[in-house]
Length: 146
Image (spheres, one colour):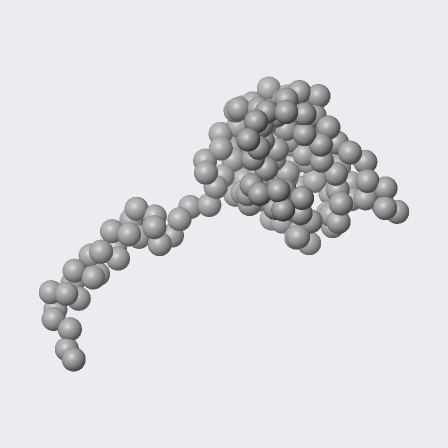
């Protein structure tokens, strides 16, 4: 069966429209801090939040994981099953409220708990040392695009 040229042309136009508005190539979520953009993995469910970055052996320098919570609170993090050190950045709305830089992987089963001193509604985990390198500190503004 031969497809009419009109139908084929219409199909191509529809595909181009979907590509141009991002349906076939959606942009990953990002976080921008001090001019540096991180491509994000999202941890939204309790299971995703429990596993976090522990499912990776490493992440690229421009990657991070964003934990999104329903309400601002004093959240606690640990390094269970982590394979590489990270910086833990606590965020409330669009500002950094606390940072734990260069958090090491656990040794000998010892799992310190990192708790924010201020309420946070999101947490960003990035590679160890980047918060110092990019001069991220309390009060730094963060722009998150989901």
